Length: 177
Image (cartoon, rainbow, N blue to C red; front, side):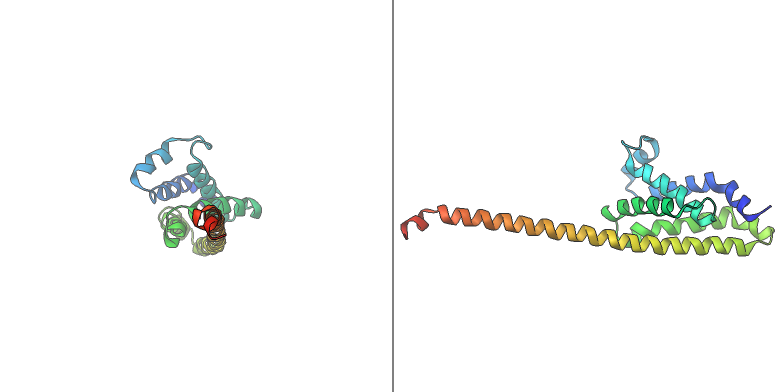
């Protein structure tokens, strides 16, 4: 059996397990909602996570990889993680949750078939995807920070205009003329 067939046989289970592992990074009161609500509009977090899981698995395996589709799925997922209240290691650590799953479910079969090199290639692709995710995460956090800076500047400017109007309208300003 080819290595790709072994990976293919485990796709559904590993995508589900990785998605569950990602859901477990959320607070306890949120995880039930993530798992049970299937509507993509009512539960965009779960939808983006499932989409990213499937794209990530395909990219790790090296099968049916459309670079743009993979990048878009990861980008949506990373944007989501970047705006949530996770530390960077918590936001991106979810990519490392795939390795133990691969090692438990796929590696033993490939070792028996003497195809460890194929397995190690897949892990290497996962590492590369994790680095891509890091780049996307940093970019998204920079955009978020710049947005917050702009918002603070706008609030300050509004307060300054308001203070000038109050100062101009104060009775002391009228008496001094």
